[in-house]
Amino acid sequence: MLFLTTLDIIPGKTEEAMYLVRKVKPPERVKVHQFLKLFGKPDFAIVFEALNEEDAVDFVLKFSSCSTPKTSLCNSVEGYEINK
Image 1: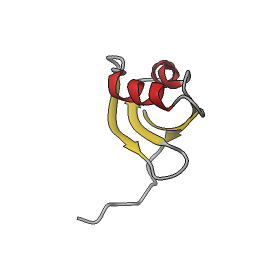
Image 2: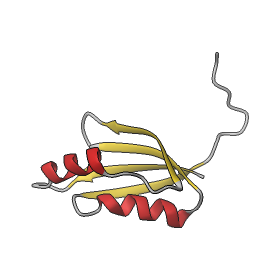
Image 3: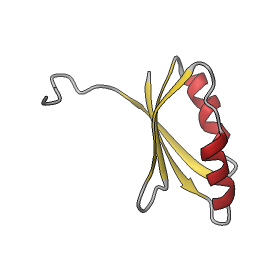
């Protein structure tokens, strides 16, 4: 399952957020594809795979002490192909 999480950093928690972004290791059953710092709000975006929603929640909650996470389950758009 593919997920997209955005993180809005809580005011005053920037240092904690930067520490977590650098130090948090995803659980064994979670594969992070991209961890992006964004220009503007939200502050970060994480694209990752997890076997199920429970694993996704366990990973995202690691950032909840310093941010407001919002997570969506992603599905491919049928018939869309990336031009090569």
